[in-house]
Image 1 (cartoon, helix red, strand yellow):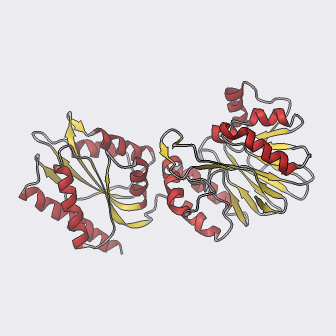
Image 2 (tube, rainbow, N blue to C red; image 1 turned 90 degrees about the vertical axis):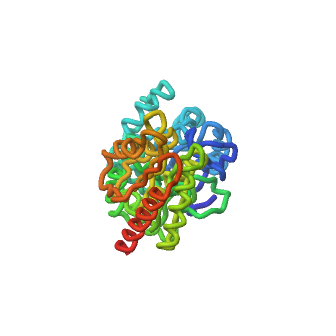
Image 3 (tube, helix red, strand yellow; image 1 turned 180 degrees about the vertical axis):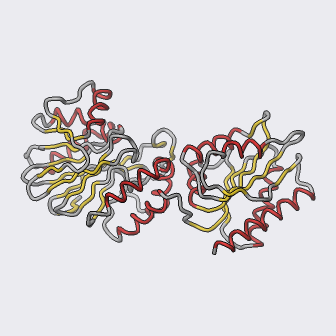
Length: 390
């Protein structure tokens, strides 16, 4: 695929994958992107997953048309982008490997070599001239590994953005960017909002015509849309109005309480209500929604003097990603000694800028008139907050 007359795409699409990074569902596959700049000297940007090494090298060979690659730019050392470094080095023995100091340490771990005789170590602000194209290397630590840098080509005003602005899904599948990019960001990058903000600040100095990420499609129109999405996500802003209800239920009684709350929220407000049964849903989708919307209701049973395991894992997924700037409400169930709300509050105590609803719901085994009135009071409070924010 031609990006410009001298920037070519040599990435691959993976439709065999079921779980990306061993945990994220990838129903539409995954793209591993790689790029080539053809100039007086030739630079290849990143490799691909090990399963596609031969296909990738064949694409490069075809693009080069008997020329030799001069540089392999290694922006990120995660194996889906770096696993074919050794194969590339063997195929192009006169090429140089360009990476950060930390990346070369990782290469020693992965390949038992740091390519000492052919490496070029780059740091923030360093440049590399290929001829007409001059690359500026921009450090991006913890977006989302410590060795990462992105590369800006002054000539074409192209940003090679490593994992930033990536998404789930193969590039030969047509789908909206936003949903799977958000799920990718929340799942993989959300913990590092401060570092993403730092990178965005650095990028603001450069004029961008296109963004070439390591996952997902080339971005070349309305770039402000993608930059604004990353700015909002990395500042933990509320993207959409609505209430997310995440629950677990053993015998259906907590589920019934959630159904009553859902009906009440729709009746009082008519806004968006998103419900996730944590024992059955895709957890990454539930976590994504918790970061997308401004209000979250956690409903679960007391279990072994704690909370139900799926709820514990869900809250852990939130706190691990610096969940903040949201309104949170609680619904607990317990047959003799309910402690679920106490446990959930304790798990969230280190989160920043959380507002806890004044009303909470306590169910003793099954929904009663008393607990139903608590549900209605909570629904009204959440809808009042919704109105006050509009």
